[in-house]
Image 1 (cartoon, one colour):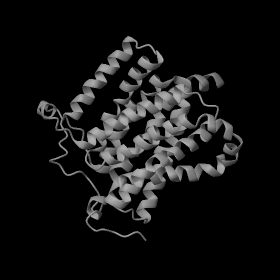
Image 2 (image 1 turned 180 degrees about the horizontal axis):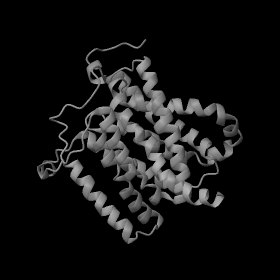
Image 3 (image 1 turned 135 degrees about the vertical axis):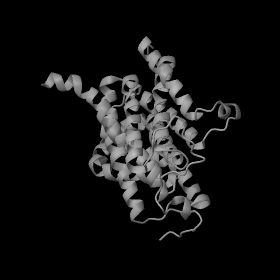
Length: 304
C-alpha cells in the first residue's frame, strides 16, 4: 500500500488539484463584482500570510539565513505566482467568461514545455509536441473568437489577453518552482511566496485605491477574500507543489487541461455559461450579480 501511495498519489493530484485551482475563476467572475480586482488579489495573499504565519513564524526565524540566501528566488516566485497569476485573472474576469479563462489558461503548458526545453534542456518528445500543437490551435481559436477578422484587426477581448499573460506567468512560476530547489519546507516557502506576492501587488493596489476605486470592507469583501485565500490559494498551491515535487514541471503542468473541464463546469453551475464555438463577450451580457463592482464605480463609496 505504501508503494501504491508513493506511485499513484501524485497522479491523483493531477485530477484533485484543479478542483481547487479552478475555483479561482469563480472568484474572478463573482468576486470582482464586489471587490476591485487588484484589491482582491492583494488582500487574498495578505490573508494567506496571516493564516499561515502562526504555524510558520518561529521556523522562519530559525531559517533566516536560508531566507536571505533565497530572497531573490522567493520574490520572483511571489511576483509571478501570486502577483501576475493572482491579479491578471481577476482583471480578465471583468470582460470575459469563466469558460474562456479556463481554456486560455491551458496555454500555460505550452510555455512550460518551451521554456523548460530552451533554458533547462528538458527534452521535448513526440507526445509533448502533439499536445503542444493541439493546445496552440485551441487557444488560438478561442482568442480570435473563430473570426479571422479579429486577427487581422488585432481586435482581441482585453480579458482574453489578461488571461494569456496570466498563463505565461504561471508557466514561469511552475518552472522555477521546480528547478530552483529550496532548503525550506513547502509551507514555510509558500508563506514567503505569498508575502512577496502581496508586496509585489502593493504599489498597484495603492494606485487602484487612489485613482480607480476604493475598496468597501463589507461582508462580501471578507467572504470572497477568505474563499480566495483558502481554496484556490493555500489548498491549490500546496497540492500543486506536492505533485510537482514528484512529477516534474511539464507533467504537472497538464493539470491545466483538467482545470479547463472544471472551469466549464463552474461556469455552467454558477454563471449559467454555455460552451460555444464562438463566445461573443462584447455582444453578450455576462451572467453577473445584480449589484456589482461595475455599478459601484459610479457610486463613489467611502471607506468605513
